[in-house]
Image (cartoon, rainbow, N blue to C red; front, top):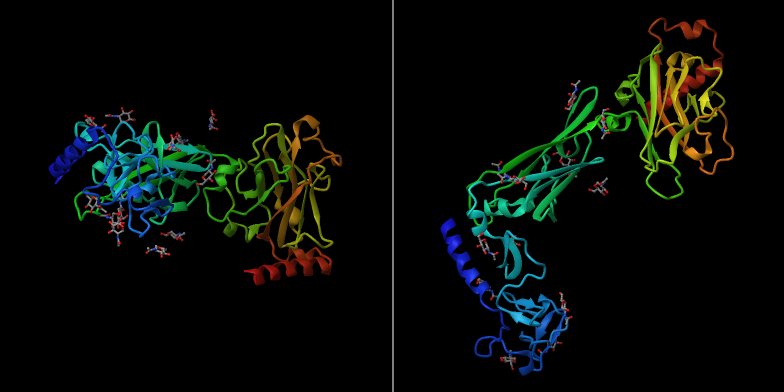
Amino acid sequence: MFLLGIVTLFAALGIAGSTPSCYNGVNGNPPLCSTCSGACTQAGCTCSNNTSCLPDAGMCSLNSSTCCLPNLSWNPDLVCCTADPYCSTACLADEVCQYVNQTAICVANTTYYKSQDVYNTSYSLVCKGSNMTISVGKNLLEVLHYKPSASTLLHSNCSGAVESILQGQRVYSLTVQTGSGVCGNKIVKNNTHVSYTNAINIPANTDNGLVGAGNLSIEFSCTYNISMWTSLTTVLNPVMSTENLNSGGSADALTSLAAFTNPSYTNPMLQSQSQDLDIGSTLYFGMSTQFADPAFVLRVDQCFATPTSDGSGSIKVQLIQGGCATGDGPYIKVVENGVSKEVRFSIASFSFQNYNSVYIFCDARLCSHSSGKCSSCASSRDVSEEPTRFSVGPFTFVDTQDNSAIFAKGLPFTVLLISLLGSLTLISEF
Ligand SMILES: *[C@@H]1O[C@H](CO)[C@@H](O)[C@H](O)[C@H]1NC(C)=O
Ligand SMILES: *[C@@H]1O[C@H](CO)[C@@H](O)[C@H](O)[C@H]1NC(C)=O
Ligand SMILES: *[C@@H]1O[C@H](CO)[C@@H](O)[C@H](O)[C@H]1NC(C)=O
Ligand SMILES: *[C@@H]1O[C@H](CO)[C@@H](O)[C@H](O)[C@H]1NC(C)=O
Ligand SMILES: *[C@@H]1O[C@H](CO)[C@@H](O)[C@H](O)[C@H]1NC(C)=O
Ligand SMILES: *[C@@H]1O[C@H](CO)[C@@H](O)[C@H](O)[C@H]1NC(C)=O
Ligand SMILES: *[C@@H]1O[C@H](CO)[C@@H](O)[C@H](O)[C@H]1NC(C)=O
Ligand SMILES: *[C@@H]1O[C@H](CO)[C@@H](O)[C@H](O)[C@H]1NC(C)=O
Ligand SMILES: *[C@@H]1O[C@H](CO)[C@@H](O)[C@H](O)[C@H]1NC(C)=O
Ligand SMILES: *[C@@H]1O[C@H](CO)[C@@H](O)[C@H](O)[C@H]1NC(C)=O
Ligand SMILES: *[C@@H]1O[C@H](CO)[C@@H](O)[C@H](O)[C@H]1NC(C)=O
Ligand SMILES: *[C@@H]1O[C@H](CO)[C@@H](O)[C@H](O)[C@H]1NC(C)=O
């Protein structure tokens, strides 16, 4: 089979080696357009009686293979159709211009690859931001009877490989976003790094009924430093709220408020973990923005908690005011605010012992370093950036010490009622 391929190729090279000339048909068939009052349109060149004709040199102003019949190529130097294949974009060093499906395209030069002893199935991986791009060389794989254009990731519905030229090689690339489960991504995480692993599956080419090679699978992985932001993509369903901050429309300012379970803010709290929290536990809240401009930092102006999901009502515990922990909140600790792209604060849930269901609201904005006020404890009224509101919740609590404590403390009836309504809302929402 392979020998036959080489013989065919030599024949093709023989033709390619001759000096190309305009194709004039055989015994006036097909006729030249000048002999039958022909004309060329987007649909091709035709005689006045609608049969196809060959454009005379310089006649077809479309200047493309649209002018030519199948198995012929438009040659822009000769401005006519030739029998020799002519590829409109130059082929690479390991390619030849050949007819495939009656159209001239660049394909792998089989003799070039046949002369190599080592088959180097090299691939390239780019880990950029939250994208992983895997690229595999097209030509060698095709010579080895694979079909890289049909490559998929671990989930076979992640397909659509894109052809491009990378470092002088024609490649097919697939891009997958980092994130748990995306296209079959697998995650390995330790205290400092997170790795996402997937695999590109290159199917064997069975177009010619050939059944030989099995599918080729190449595993790849990208490793990132763990940070508040990257940790959020390592889990499904974190307690998280994501908004685009008002950044004057200049650039992407995706920002997230999320709850964490550890003081290094790298273990996101799952939605399933936000119920029946021990009333004594500490909740860690982190915000992180993707806004890249180094002239700006992230600042939270205020945060408060309410038993209601819309933040309204008279029951409200102010947590952060003017960028700093409120005086009446001894259990609130602002770890970092207005100094970087991240904000961190923690709340001991004793603060909420009057409620069994709590929503947290925060107003955050980008703050210009040059103002010198981004980390100050003051309500900055003179800012141009409107804050954006984030909310997460509900968090529900159980008093593992003594469930009757709430009643023993003789809370006002309204407080209890509102807590209960909070729980009811929760039930009806899910
Ligand atoms: C159309 O015209 C060409 C050239 O005059 C001729 O060779 C061909 O037979 C004609 N075809 C029909 C269907 O009349
Ligand atoms: C050629 O085709 C066009 C449209 O397809 C038609 O209108 C026209 O009558 C045809 N002419 C002849 C000579 O068949
Ligand atoms: C035809 O296209 C080629 C490039 O594709 C260009 O170099 C050439 O000048 C064009 N010729 C005409 C007559 O437009
Ligand atoms: C084009 O060439 C191929 C192979 O040489 C041949 O099988 C096919 O019939 C040709 N097609 C046309 C429209 O001439
Ligand atoms: C050639 O055409 C066939 C049928 O339309 C298609 O299945 C095949 O993928 C094509 N080959 C290439 C290289 O485009
Ligand atoms: C294909 O590769 C062979 C071996 O390297 C080389 O001799 C030949 O010139 C190449 N063909 C083309 C069209 O580049
Ligand atoms: C395989 O390709 C890579 C990248 O093109 C190159 O660095 C490496 O030396 C090649 N290995 C062999 C055995 O050719
Ligand atoms: C990631 O990939 C998506 C589409 O695949 C693209 O829109 C986005 O710009 C890419 N992001 C980066 C940082 O390359
Ligand atoms: C892709 O396949 C996975 C399972 O194989 C499935 O969960 C997912 O919904 C599919 N996605 C699409 C867009 O079909
Ligand atoms: C965490 O994983 C990274 C990357 O896999 C590795 O380099 C590092 O040594 C690991 N650290 C620990 C403490 O295991
Ligand atoms: C190879 O991949 C194709 C398409 O992705 C799939 O249909 C086929 O079952 C796979 N074959 C093997 C042996 O894994
Ligand atoms: C990852 O962390 C190490 C050690 O903290 C640091 O030197 C390196 O620059 C970080 N890399 C990135 C891409 O942030």
